[in-house]
Image (cartoon, rainbow, N blue to C red; front, side, top):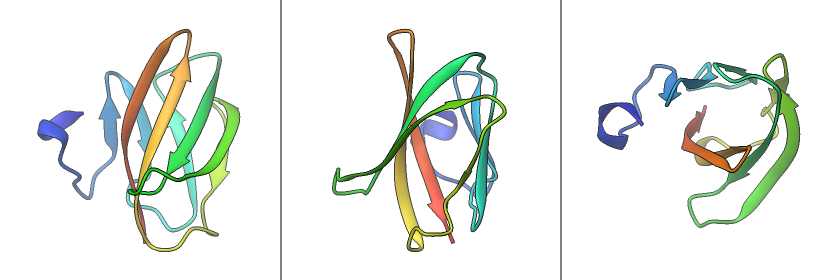
Amino acid sequence: MKNGGTVASEDIDVQGFMVYPNPTSGEIQFKGISGTFKLQLFTLHGQNIYGCKVTNDSRINVQHLSPGVYIYNITQNDKIYAGKLVVQ
């Protein structure tokens, strides 16, 4: 993660992969990776609360999530990208 793992009110870019907008109160999108990948969202306690297969063009609605900080994992071809998502 950029900035030594801190979360700022800007888009989070993980090794060329971006989840945006971040923070969000609606939908998230993806940039910087091609093909299909697996998205998982976790609470800070490690509870898996969401999972699906997505592409670079996908939009995921997160309006149902309570405001707070979540961890996302993106898995593709044995590579795992992780970061924090802030829901307002």
